[in-house]
Length: 228
Picture 1 (spheres, one colour):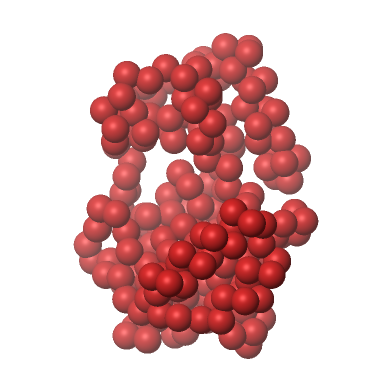
Picture 2 (picture 1 turned 60 degrees about the vertical axis):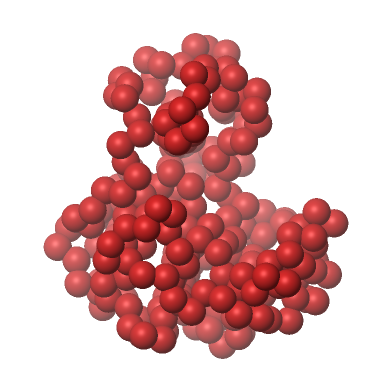
């Protein structure tokens, strides 16, 4: 997650959508007052800064579920004001209204069938697991992104959700708007070496697995008109 006072934008980082690569690229154009959350593992030249601090957690907790309240309280007690995958809801409560209302807010989302395979292979590699795709589904930790950029009622809180499948061209439009230099590519591919099976996702899923993803990601599919 990045809040740039220099360029007046807020970047909300979603899962398996080139978020780390975008953070690394944008970090080169941030200054000493901008907020950059940590990347794990770290990727140069990105350096985290100004992400710790305290805020008034009461308004945020009043609108959260019981489980979410405990999470917010835990963040407050540890001074974790901003996190790498902080949601737009979290950020909205933790910055002044003038910043939230006037900065350009954006994120990226991705076709869920493709995104799911990417997330599955990442977990297998990171944890050295012999997990099948069905076991991954049974685990229940899916890479749903809409809660990162929507509120509890499903309202989109960011100004633009970029399409991963057209990322370079759409980043070009956003960066031009923000006066950030861009030559058509990020020049970095962080966390992109987890997937060994590079078959098109249509050739990987069984019909049952295809339907499982369709049901699990139905809100994102309807929101962005994704198709298998």
